[in-house]
Image 1 (cartoon, rainbow, N blue to C red):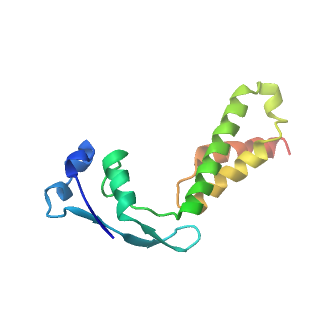
Image 2 (tube, helix red, strand yellow):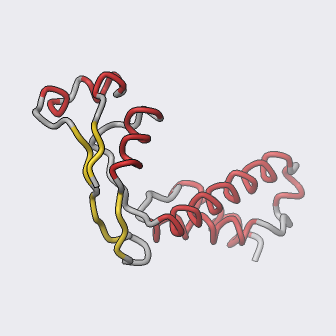
Length: 134
């Protein structure tokens, strides 16, 4: 599928890229394999138009996860934020017995399987914390 591009709606950084001055005037479907599951997926022309012209994503951004793996990653990131909030609400004496620390550590480590950089500092901190209290 091909969809016309309106480059005037691109983000400032996209308008500063050399693609802005190129002859490209449309979006075309881009097939890719999901980083996590390996399934063949497509970054459709319509999805590109919405991403670049409405959400103002940078035009060189490409998809790496299929929709189901992306949803899984979003849930994982939401869980990590919840763990961070719980940790912040704990007092120092109760952090040693916080039941969610192991689950939080596991969630942090799973991020890597989606092709994203995990929070290595927090992983190290929690591993030390669990080691002290094991």
